[in-house]
Image (cartoon, rainbow, N blue to C red; front, side, top):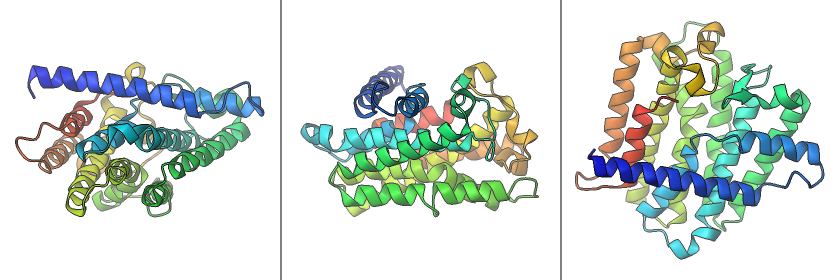
Length: 295
């Protein structure tokens, strides 16, 4: 990656994150709207920041596939907000005492620590509803189905079940890949595919981007596992070492930390290999960014 490509990539990420925050501000209910307590809890979690990787991937795929910029405001923009909102809903529920029982998220108390467990459950539920309403507003049935499959029992929810059932057992590499590919990878892959679908991508392009999404999605979670061991709590915005304390099935735990790093790097290389050598797509920068991230 040249210095110019790096600067352009960082600028793209910064500008897109700003756009995502504007969209979330636009689509989320006001704290002044009844029920105020629920809307305050929802906004507390969604507007807490974050990498916004899923909406970034969606618009990058949309642009890569030649999506019409004049239609972005009614297609990919609400889809971007929907993806970030459904991701936040999953984090709220994942942090609950009955799941991972985490106290910190994005550098501040988790939703249930701030507002109580019942309100956190309801906040997640309400965000889930808003996300699907926004995705339906794109007018694309395929995009709605894609989101449903990414979130459902074959995707994120199924991955969460597998994650819970793997606690405290001698999990294999295959088991962990199954968990990561569904719990984290499915929504990342779905974000790429939704952007491509909204742009009207042909089957060949959609297949290539699907492969890209699968690779970066799995790499993302492997790196998350590594950061839980070697990362800095202040940088991450959440406690480190929690996976080990909870006897979670993690990638470094089954293959070693060194091998996990090598495998994540290999996945990023495979994702880059989806594109032609001359292709300077922002999607390539995002893959490298995911491979090098520290939070």
